[in-house]
Length: 131
Image 1 (tube, rainbow, N blue to C red):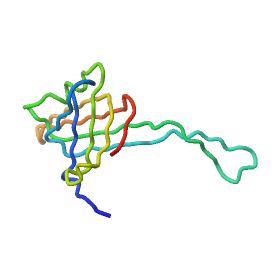
Image 2: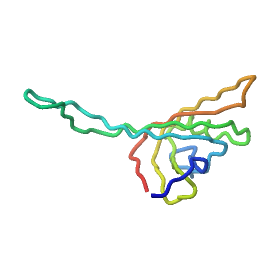
Image 3: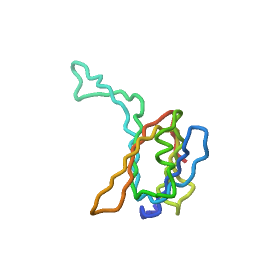
């Protein structure tokens, strides 16, 4: 099993559902949550709780430093048809990534004692996959 350092992670995102995804510069982290709905189907006499699995509730987040040369995250958050996203755990394993359409929410944080930071969250806007 090969292990990778997170410093080579990548996020590619388009600014619309039909646009081309490009690398989002200055990001420092991303996360992907692929939780699955579980419905309790425990019945009388069962030895323990039992569940059936429903749909994935795919969402995640990203964060980094504001890039004054690019407003792509803001444009993505304003998109009426969502965006395309590609999340790479490492550019050293460029053939492995997660991808799918998403809705984007953006935050910007400005402080007198810190760098200007940008962060956001995303939720699935269709089916996601992994390569």
